[in-house]
Amino acid sequence: MEVFENHLIAPYTTINLGGEARFFCNCNSEEDLRNCVKFSKENNYRLKIIAGGSNVIFPDEGFRGVVAKIEGEDIKIIKEAKEFVLVETWAGTDWDNFVKWSIENSFSGIECMSGIPGSCGATVIQNVGAYGQEISNVINEVITFDIESGKNRIFKNEDCKFGYRTSVFKNVYKGKVIITKVVFRLSRNTIDDYSYPDLKNEITKYKEYSNFSRIEKLKFIRNAVYKIRKSKSMIYDKNDPYSISCGSFFLNPILNREEFEKFYSLAKEKKLDPPYFKVNTNYKIPAAYLIEKSGFYKGYIKNGAGISKKHSLALVNFGCSTESLLNLANDIKDKVKNEFGISLEIEPDIIK
Image (tube, rainbow, N blue to C red; front, side):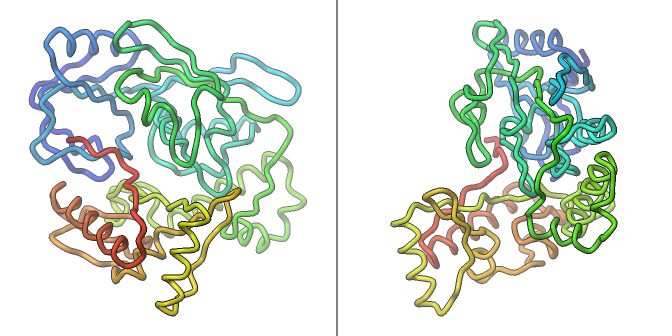
């Protein structure tokens, strides 16, 4: 395990923000993680686990504790059946590399989540999803170890309490367990009905698609998703200034019927016809719409922090500080609350 003192955190995050960590550890195994936990506990230091750094923002003054970065990759099939396979990955395994591996082996269930930055372990915490697929649909079990007791604990799918961009690892067990391995259940013979509009349009434009073999279809979907995400600067690329972000910064609000009717009535008073999506008995409102109708626009910049020209939900570091970025986020939240009575929730993990 490599340990560095007073080490700059920013380069290990996709938004490139944050001061120095008192100690920074590269962990390539569970043993490394356990040693890191032991060190932090014995010296009474705070501990923060990161991997791809795509959904975390550290303060300008740094982190006066231990930052442990999970590194290394490991993917292995642990069970094969006629209709599915169980695949175990090390938590630090790059998510997009895993998606690529699954497609090359003709396994489906995660192809629509191509291009998402981060690690396999982190995708579970957020219940990451894109273009109609979600992590919750392919999780068999999550292997962790308890920071306090040091014992391993296994969470079955139902134990994870998955919801819209959330799980027990984001709330109940945040800072209490560390995800070390994830077991995915991938399909060997089915392919999803790709009904998400942007993706469906790409398929419709390509008439040969229906004649493709299974693996050709999976590769086509991966390339189509890449094309869509890249057009929105949602593929992390150091050479693309609009991708220096955490991706979507705000969650799409989910309103119950009473909240929705109040919001819809208010929108109509403003002569607006807001889009919405029915989710069981609730209503999902696009946060991007609320932001734009509250007076902000794509390309807006204040003190080096801005809204991407390509995606209203992405807040971008154009040479700002963490303080400036969070000030912009709070400005947006306040305006949306004042205009529509809706409180936007920030998606990235803001370290204080």
